Image (tube, rainbow, N blue to C red; front, side):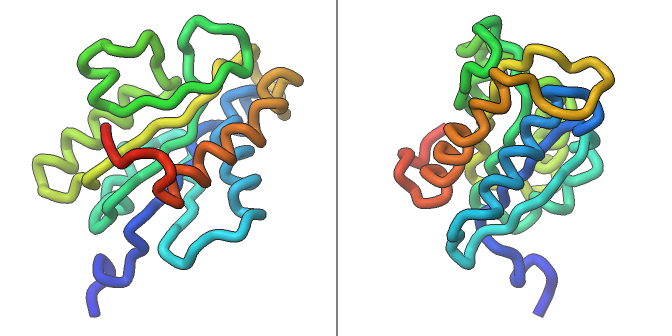
Length: 162
């Protein structure tokens, strides 16, 4: 059996750098989701900050949920949900701190026919991404709500649309 056939159809990736304050939001949410009762068809991955290196992780997935700090101009801790298509169409005023890497990776994945059917980005507005360990109070307070959003994506409570 090949590696692709062994993969779970759903991948949840936490993106960010835990040494840069609120940029560690994605990893904090991933840790919270990891404490929940997950179905067996879900893989969790701490993707760090270099999404372009993770294209192979996308291969064979039906749905990928990316969790990241997102600049959308709202108050710190505001939660966002959008797709890469929303970003490309400029339908949302938000950008992930690692958006360029994500969009480039998805374009490359499409070229080699390994792009997931659906990609959803769940993020929170950061307050401070300077060199420091730990989230600000406002962003830390958003972790549980973001974990609930991820669980809704996993369970299919959110309509499967981009």
